[in-house]
Image (cartoon, rainbow, N blue to C red; front, side, top):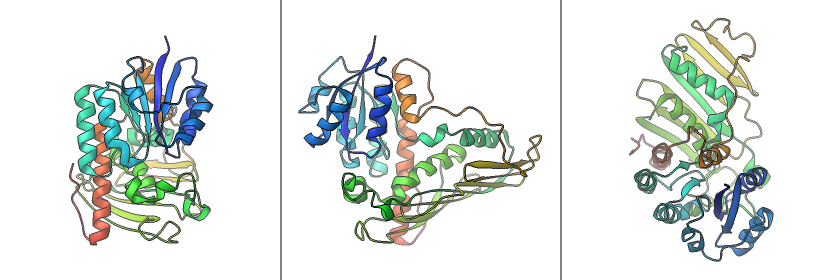
Length: 335
C-alpha cells in the first residue's frame, strides 16, 4: 500500500527538487495535498504533483490517512508547524535550519523525540562518498591527533541575484533566521560536528558584502570552533564566491586529507597506499539524498537519519556564532 504524504509550506528553494523526487517515486507515495499560505505557490506545486490544494493546514493535520509531511515553509513558521505535526502524529521532513536559535530548536527536538516520530532534515552532504570515507577514517584513528579541520560551502547567490524574487524571504533574517552564513554554513557545520562532536567555544566574523539584500542580511562569514578533543575548526560560507575549489581539509599528526575540485587526496601512515600523491578513489558507495532517505524510512526501510537533537545542536552553534560576530567575542553554544 502506498504511503500518503503532504507538503506543508513550499517556500524553500529546495522545494522543486523534492517535488521532482516525489514524482519519481509516485508508485510508492501518494501526495495527498499541498498547503502554503500563498495560494499561488501552493497551486503551482499541487499542479505538478497532480494533487489538491489544501485551503488550511488543518486539512492535513486532521487527515488520519496522511503518514508524513514535508515542511518547506519559511523558517519562522517551523515552530508552529512542527508542533501541529507532532500533535497529529505525522512523521516529518523539516528543511534546515530546524529553528531560529537554540531555544526553539531544542523545544521542537524534544517534542519530536517524545512523540517517537521519524524526523529528517536537509543535511544531504552526509551522503557524499568522500565525507562517508573521512568520517570512517577519523573513527579508525587514521589521522592520529587531528590538529585542525577546515570546511567551506560557498556559491555566488548574491552576485547572481538568486534571491531577488521568488526566494526573497531567504535573504531576510527576520523570516529565515539567518543570511548566507547560516544558510550554507549549517551544511558543513553539520559535517564537522558529525566528524568531531560538539564545539565548546566559537567565534566568527559574519557580514554583508554587496548589501544587495540590505545591511542586515549577511553574505559571507568565517568562524573558528574549538572542539573538545583539541581540534581547531575553521568554517567559511557565503553567497559572494565565484568558486569553492577546496571545501575540506583535515590535518592530523598521522594523516592528512584535502578535497580539491571534487577529488580527495589522502595521506595516512595507517592506510596502505595512502601517500597523498594522487586522487584517492577507494571510496564507499555514496548514500542517497537526505530527502530520499526520509522517503525510504517512511516506506519501512532502515535508514540513518539526522536526529532532531542533532538538528537542534546545529541551530545552537549557529546562534552562538552570530552572537559572537555581533559582540566580537567568543561564545559557548547552549545545547
